[in-house]
Length: 209
Image (cartoon, rainbow, N blue to C red; front, side, top):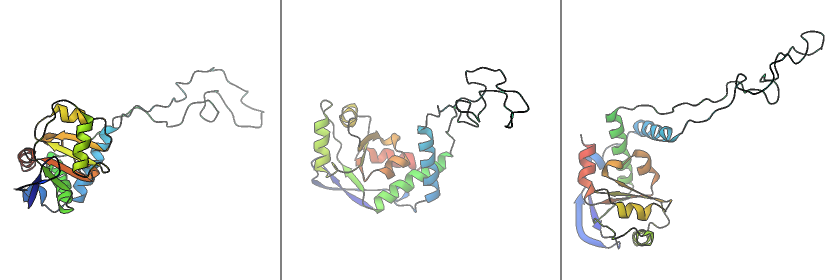
């Protein structure tokens, strides 16, 4: 599969690159994608939720009424969950939501995500670029040139590029990662995936193992 290489002004450079069919042209595995996205979202959860149970409520421990003769149910503590202000029954406790996945499955999921975007013509390959200093305005100009200013975009750079990353950090619809930072959720969540020319080799070597 050949894709034209654009410059950051959105113009065709006249060159084309060959995308590996092992990474960008496989039959997508929906279940692998589901598991990898589920793990990614689970790992974002802090898991710090906590409700007080009856043993943690501050309150008197005296028996609030006599056992018999009241005509109502017996009650031994004001901290009982049946009373307002009492503890919560089976309330949430702090927990870790993360879980492990096989490396080969994660690799399959990422290849499936890239293949889906490639099949839908949502991959854009651009020449490598850099900024002399972090400038959000310059990054916005790149988005406008590529007609991505109103869309969600994922930029995959060849090497860690601090100025480009800092220029994009304030834009909620754009995300910048290097070739090793690709994940299934980010690829599928973007309307367009913009890949720097030098990152292709890293992506293909990482996912073709």
